[in-house]
Length: 590
Image (cartoon, rainbow, N blue to C red; front, side, top):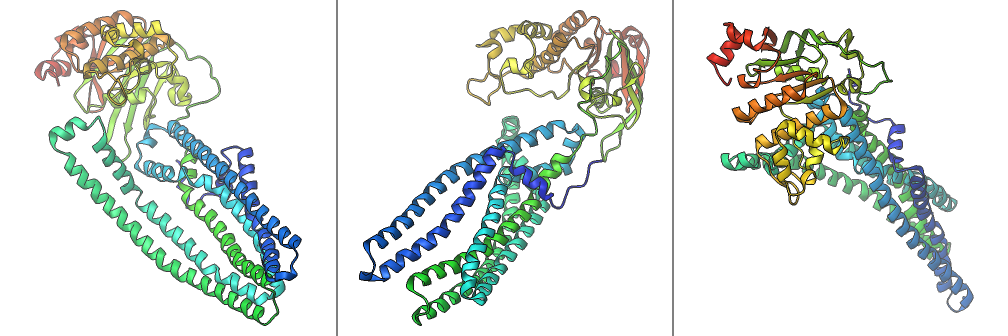
């Protein structure tokens, strides 16, 4: 079982996310942020010198005025330089962290089991994680730097102001607290709202993508569905926008209240300092310095609490990211090198399986695939054939029973070790809008002669040769100069992908789920003949729906209701008045 999603991410993990760009980048960003914040301390003193020099009139020397101007302008120019470099480093740091977080999320998504990726709760978690991963980690270092800077600023300015009037310091500082507290509460409300609306946000992304997708374009237009989905997307946007606007209205009222209190305290302090200056207790320069100290003391308190509140807010919003990356697959993908697997039969023994929240799909499947044997699996739609293919590829483990090679249970192996022994064509195999070469060998590990051989077995050599750039021709219409293929041509290429894996890795087991889909009967017969000849010696399980596609195999297994209910050679089953004969004779094409 995976742990429940966290309410708040551990502070150590949040800080670690901010360092994904590398320690040198983080250190430089941190140092420049603090330096840029400390420069105003010198600016305050330089401004006092300048104002006092001007206020002294003729009594001030040119040298005194020049020194004050030189100090003030030097600090200002240094501030401009530090600010510009800091902005550049900060932008670079943000991009690097965003990229690293995206890489981490994609890597984690590729590790998870198929059952996890199909789980709506995990998808909601991934939606929330992805919405924050691009920006929040990059802001963590800046907020930590702001926290340190605020401490330094508050200590320096607060000390200056407290030396003049401790009560004034306390009033100004405490007046900044309510605005920050209200901000923290608003952050928690936003987090709660985003968490509760994750399913709606994911549905909006899906519906919007569906309207704009190429795969659904034909049916959307032919069936007139577009307006329905546009209305649905609009309704979801209206609901989400309404919730966001209610939060924004509430935040506005609270900000006015909190900021109003801080402003009132600030100008009360200005009035107090002004009265002392008019009474002669403070020079004009001292008044300016203390007025700036008042402002920066209040700002320091606000920044200190605000930076801490920001870290707390990051912990809330990044809980989804840290929870998602903490998920562990139930099927171990990688493990220490194990002994070579035996050349033995692949056996399903009383295999039961059900998808979460659904009735059982497999109800005690018994099936043996011996080395070099060619077996066809046939049955009506919904009988469990494609689900069994998933289990053989170890995308799921049985709920009960076992799948083993020889005496070794697949669940005791690393998934990668088993999958290296298997080439599989799924019923809904994905076509890539990339080059023909990428479609045939997505890992890029198959030599070109083997790609051509795989195309020949799949019956796609002529189509491949006719492409303008051969293996480097872009397929599909997503990118410029892409060549579109028919459904049958795509199916041949997807079959060639599985066959290329067989040829390159000499995989002892091959599972093909409806390789002749979208092919006419003559093409299906020709394909069957090539598979029989070129896969001799390989254990092959082929799922098919047509008699001409299975007449050549060694054995046929008929599946119904999640069980193997009949087995025999094609001749035996054709002669017998049983499920196979009724499937292909009484209801041909089912």
